[in-house]
Length: 436
Image 1 (cartoon, rainbow, N blue to C red):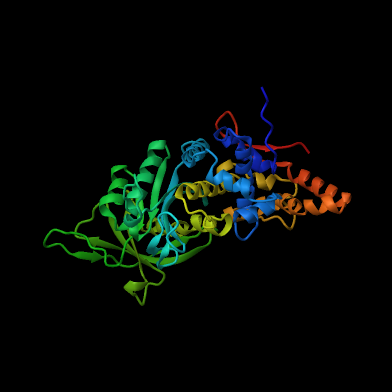
Image 2 (cartoon, rainbow, N blue to C red):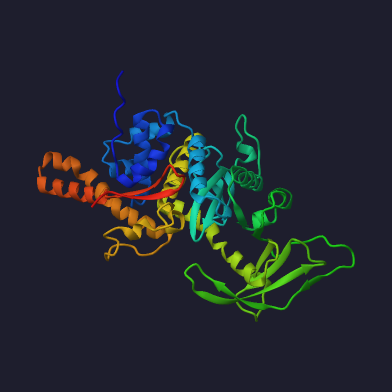
């Protein structure tokens, strides 16, 4: 019996992370493509197309990567379940905030599955495109990718599809996460979900989950005859930002008849010159919530756009060129996995910032910030010798410059002393370093 060959290595911290998924890919070439795409997705190239990724990897063509997405017998669902199980082990019961959002990508024509003219919230207009509903986790300022579901318009349903609204998709994903064992402390969403009383909000209430959602300025509430709408006086509160800076804002409660578990608020930057069009309108269902908490919980909504924006601007979420949804789903799952690989190197998730422990982390070129993008920049710095060396290998095969090749190999070996983070058998995240 011929023993399967060892997968070709890429960069150590990528290889160590991808080992947790190796059993999903019985073919060596498929697992190699899985690792290679993680390298390409986090690399510093503007467009994450397969030809561009192939150049970073020093591949002669993109066919192997394309085959991995189109014909290789792996399932996006299996990758998703494995990723979520790793996140659960890592969190160890800690509370997370769920961020629900939807986003659209403009696409030409009708050849791509589930594309039609529809409202694309991130563009703020109706256009031809594909829409996806996403759920991210937030813990101490770091986002964790969890689930996504493509929105399937009625006119574009395929055989076996069942029509579900965006709010139904969001409710289904939240229910799934709670059933899996995620400890959800709060749910945040925009007005599309805040106005969805019968599907999304009723689901959250049935699951016993507190929420803070946007509502429209003309939001209405049924009241018994004889009751009226009251508004309290404006109160100042200190809006505290993630960088610990603060700013005074103003908030008041809107009371429809008698107070109930659902409470309504208006928030704005100035007490005077009130204009209803300039206010933020908020609905909460959080037991014992205070004025200060409303403002700062609502302020967490800035994270609603953050997660998917990073996926799009940094990891190539929208750069797919496939038309079949099964392939698009695989691409999006790979982006989610690459996003998690970056998040794992934060002090919030690992318990100790491995990046700060590196011997070169005090140098001028090292990004000293603690946000997700700061971590990505440092990982790219570690990755860069590998991604720069691969495209020039064909030159060095023709024009022999042994000193240059030797220098690149030494630099890559030095970068590979950073081996990344890994789950131990004790079901916790350990930090691993090679010996100096």
